[in-house]
Image (cartoon, rainbow, N blue to C red; front, top):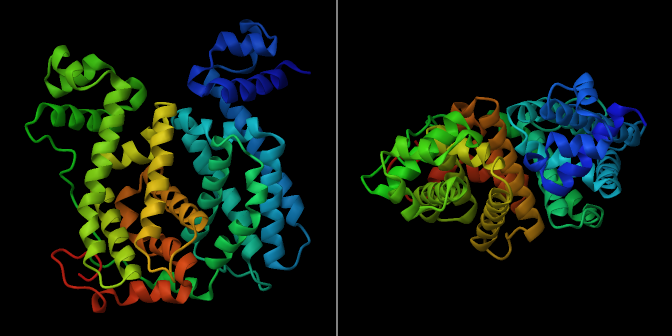
Length: 414
């Protein structure tokens, strides 16, 4: 096997075993049976080797899915074949899948940019699979992005659970979830504007005078602007204006402090949006009002948005666990508040929250966070359509003011 191919193979194996951040150049060259001198003939850095490996995996996946659906005329079948091929790729090579679907988030800005470039190719495949005979677009672009993100969430959950074959077993449920979003009424999403949906300039990350709060605010600010990888305790202490003794009174180190910042700010953000859900007279319009409010809050709080939807992938297993637990918690909350006849299945709720998370990540990673409020109707549709159908989901957004008690600064009815 050629040296370059052996390096790709070693990167796949080591990233799966240790995580990208723990892969050293020494381990990589040893596993590939390549000298460091020869390594630098092929790549300038570990990151470049990772990105080249990522490209190979993604391009192989795209070619396989394209070949599987080629020639199939019925769109339901195209969709099913495409997903089964994707699931088979993951089950057949879970290490490669882990690199592309999980470790890429930890590999820095270059990998995030690669994913941002690769995602449209998968979205285009799904859009073509969904297209009617005349070739027109069946669904809005952002909704297709959500569908791909939801499938990605299901795939990551299977990999993280240690059961990559779970994707094949879940095929029927996933297809039901996707098809629930393919309602003809989805075309109306493009006509739902974002009037009154300007960002809310959040104060959640501002220090309150309390020492712990001051450290959390400094962590949010620095992690968002400098990146988690560059954080050090002396840097956080200097930014917060506290002594080493004070810092270690509250936190065990950088990762512990970062984790506490994530948990505190996410709790505050959800708590601030919750009244918009609780004051609604029905579950569906309440979900939309809460989603719209969250979009405005995130758009106005770039520090927290960057932490929760970008830098969260950097620290390692604990942050991965936080993200997975947050998605599961939000999915459980979505189900818990719904009337029994409208309650989405546990699978659909988690796929929907994963889809919403992916759409928000797109706005954060692409530097267009201030435009997030315009995505509120699509995000609400992702949450609601699998439970109540497309037409009812749209209705919950079209006339929310008639279904809810007035509140101050209502993001939907204003």
